[in-house]
Image 1: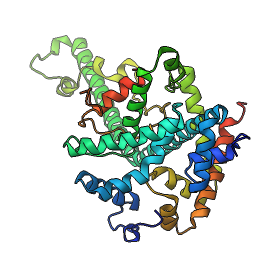
Image 2: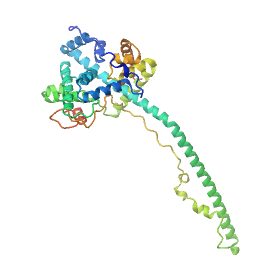
Image 3: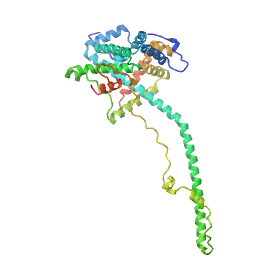
Image 4: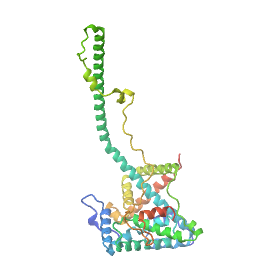
Length: 191
Length: 197
């Protein structure tokens, strides 16, 4: 056991904690005296941590996918509301247009027959036109179109596999008063 | 270690057995009960050890650091400095802190040798590669049999549970659970090692 290098399967089982006590002790004894196997074990441990992170990331993405599915009826309702909104705008446009035609017609007829012009007469549709909002503020008047809110872009980072510790816990060393989370960051940055 | 609390397997409020059992143990440990700490140490020590090995810590030293980690946490709890106990995260952070202390105290050439591998992706290319890995793992999981996938995901979502506890929950043998984990893991690693087309 100590002369030959350990097979990768054995290291994998060690990392996965699938070995019984005797086999586990054998691996540890060998790795303690074999730099190559120690390095292979470290690589195997890193691969396992990576895999844990990736599996957690896949789960994270799947959960977000479910949220998107849940959001579908909401989006349909929003579309419906937008449709109603667009219909009411179209109605207002046509009513405004009709009022404008009536106004032009009445002004034109008044100008054509200025001798019979009655100043107190309110042209038909004038109230309606004045009640309409300014055309320049409408998106349809400037050629803009209504668009949906952009969907959340797909995340590129995997969720961390290790849970973050509570930030209100004191630092582990007596010499350090930083919270554990800060210690983690400072340790990551190479203390 | 096998099946500790079968009564917790079917929790009426939908809490998974691992969560409920872990919660009880954490409460017991925070209350200062040695038995609670003993069970938590038994459950999480290996994961803490693996996190140190992944950082290139020698195995004997890694064992020592794991012991020291638990001692520090127990001392912190006795001193009233622990309000919550999120495991294994807190123990891993503590152990890595101790390993970083080792590096800091080592002479300069050794410090360089003990430097942990840089894992955080920095560039857009790294992020794209990570994303590709995620897609590959997701696709490989999709190809797995649903039952095998369910077992595999349960094992990875509940690191606090032993294979025996998972087996009891899934109504499988412990050996079968281990076999499934190894098979699925093999497929995932093969997918990750595939050449990019």
